[in-house]
Amino acid sequence: MSVLNKIILLCLFALPAKAQKLQEFLPKEATETAVIVCPGGSYCWLSKETEGRGIARWLNENGIAAYVLYYPTAGWAGFAWHTRWLFRGNQYPDQLNMLNDALRKVRAKGYRTVGAMGFSAGGHLVLSSAEYSPQEIAPDFVAPIYPVVTLSASCVHRRSRRGLLGERRWRNKTICDSLSMEKHTDRITCPVFMINCKDDPIVDYHNSELMDSALTANGKPHFYKQFARGGHGFGIDKRKTSKEAIQWGTFFLDWLRRMLAKDEVKN
Image 1: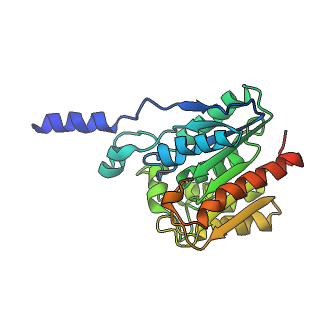
Image 2: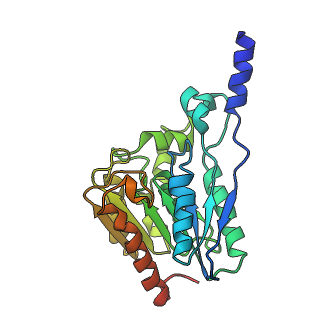
Image 3: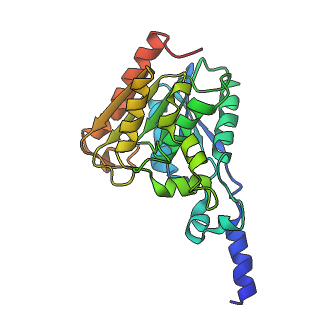
């Protein structure tokens, strides 16, 4: 292959994927509660089945409407070849803008309560929405599951930071601090449900501990559960984690039902 052809091929792979979408999953019975699901993948790719469609089906089984958001990512080519030095590709704030658009679309369907659940990097995304989305569309609750939280502390997940910010900004202290969720919990106006595992080999468990401490210090309503074992990236699939960690789904459903019964979410 000639050098010119290689350059053309590189340029094509560097182009942002264009098939981003919001996929609807509805339960058998009508419901007033919907959850936008944001899969993980280090802001570089998406775990579409385990942390997307699988979660949506589980929510449907429990009477909750689900909308899986396939938000923009760096892509494997962008991650491997650092092409965003030359081409912008997908990077912040594209992901938050798409989530905001999804919140508008789902709210327009008339649900009484609209929340957002995110996994790993998707957890960081839903926390970003809780802190920075306009109040008229901001989620009524967020559920970051084994989330990336900080972009500036020593426990930062570096791949997610680069995936989100691109090669030109991922070391910029100002923007990293602005997108470190634990530093801005005073902005959160909705309840937070959060879990992680202490043996997580991908995202340092201190991410969630930082967020829990910050939420507590700011008096924000939240539920936090840390499991000793369970790892990372398991979604709701009991085959991929411990018997202990898979209980997070039950904890979440109980938390949500209590919250809805008490009308604690903002409406």
